[in-house]
Image (cartoon, rainbow, N blue to C red; front, side, top):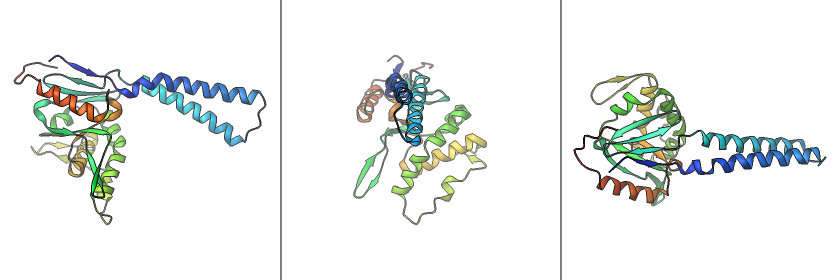
Length: 228
């Protein structure tokens, strides 16, 4: 097994968003110069829409061309703000997380990884990526709290900023590392996983990616000395 690369599907639409943003801007400018009578709010909305589309496209373009690097030894998540990396031997399980919906469960647009030990991730993750993930996953936490806890549950502790985090081995983390560690612990408690890769970072639908990843794992050489 050689190193496998996963290219994010979200990046494929980057140029389309940029072009569409330019087209909307050009159309708005043409209508304005042609003297079309539109409410001031409509002009403003069209300009804002064109800028938003263009900036969204640019944001997709500057994302790394590869979101996941999978080797016989490690899984590495790449983001423009940094990366995290886990050893296959540190993965307890992985799946598509879900939340309660009446008598059934609704899947969430992520692949979740449950780890034996999160310390290697805390030791390596960049502060910029840690802060971004905590912010990005607020809606994930909110969905889990609404569906997995009772209506009278006190949510306040889940949004408090921790002063420190003490790992299972007794190592103390502070600042951004502590914040990320506590958020990972909360999501593990509610959804069962420590780390989450969004569906937009994958190159195929969630179920297909999960099946593919299981096949990759089944063909992974054990006791490899490959260094990623």
